[in-house]
Amino acid sequence: MKDEERQSAELACEKIVKQFAVFNDLGELEKLAALFVEDGSFARPLDPENPTIGRAEILAMLQARPPRLSRHIMSNIVIDVLGPDEATGISYVTFLSTTDVDAARPVAAEPKIFVGEYRDNFVRTADGWRLKSRKGNMTLIFG
Image (tube, rainbow, N blue to C red; front, side, top):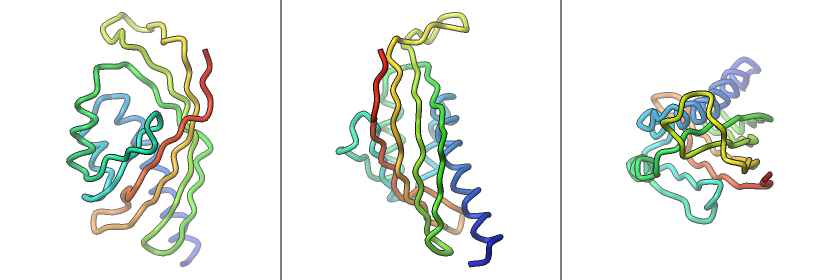
């Protein structure tokens, strides 16, 4: 691959990592699910050994969660392009939230802060880069 193609793939995959967090926090769950290929898999950081498989199933799982105001802060995003149609990535996530979704902003977050990581596999499709799999894992809990 040429450097320009590699850099373009890295940026596209990094954008998916960031979009995942924003769509999740804003409740734009259809957009979040669309980041996956049709048969993609997602293992939540608090339940990494039980992935949800399939775009429709991922959307249903996300929609079934109780309401929560959250912020996923993504950092240390590293994308490795393996070829023209495949890449992997790792990113760190810091997660703050509250169930007090109707409170005036700013609202106090729950006292626990979670820090973990996502390990991703990306593929290029006719619609652009998408997540083939995303596996989360929590590493640290504060509070």
